[in-house]
Length: 324
Image (cartoon, rainbow, N blue to C red; front, top):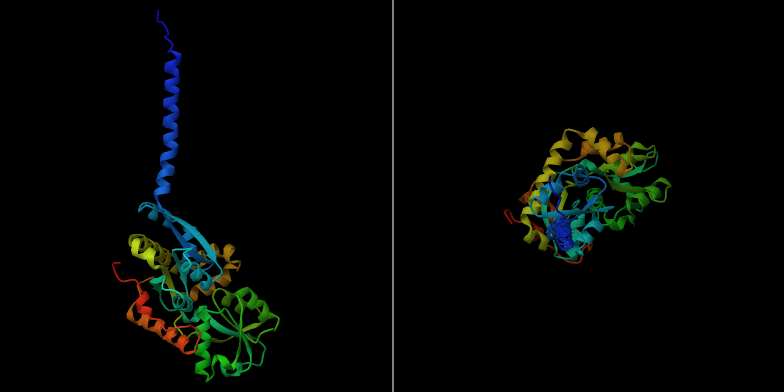
């Protein structure tokens, strides 16, 4: 006959304490590990490779293996995104050609990490479809809406220059895309300079006609940029981000309809219209070469001559060196 031996109250208390300690340790250790991970703050826009990367969720495990975690912040366009980078609110983001020029003129905190190939058809000057304006030269004395400091700012400068005009020959009206479209549709401005996918959406409407796109005028590169201090300390993490972007690029290039369906809900533009914009987009992220640096320098020099930035800047001084 067996006899059940009960533990003493003191021993039971010790066992309970031990179990609680082990449970508490199991809860604390993962939290401590997460707390030790370095946070990378990424700025993105509603349209483009970074929003696809965010949606696919492939970056987080890649960076977690290196000891990083990710937070995402959405911006309406490049200028406020790079203002946030200069202010130390984000570590990495993407923008078109012109916003980095203004940001570099304001601070030395940013650095170019990589770029996408030229996509000149992805931005254009629009006029009313049935309106009288048929050439860029006919914009003289007209009101032209654009987002100040955005990539289309340079497109407008170059288009006017080719037509023998300058910014002083028109009346620039600086508006964000949504406000600019509203002003354009009600006839408050005579022309609107805009980029995809807003360009594709406007073209799909009944009132807009393309006066000139960027072909032969501007390359319209997309750049990936980082805070200089962050880049100096976290090179492997930046390499991991660019590698993840390259994977998304490879997928998106051959799956534009799927990309359009994925982006449509967040962008608020129907998938068929987005597909038009995506067909004009370039793919294949890569480091900046001498030609791209020279093109950016030309923009910077032009804006300095026009008094749009307060000082001369050197693009090469803000490009990430290979292996750094």
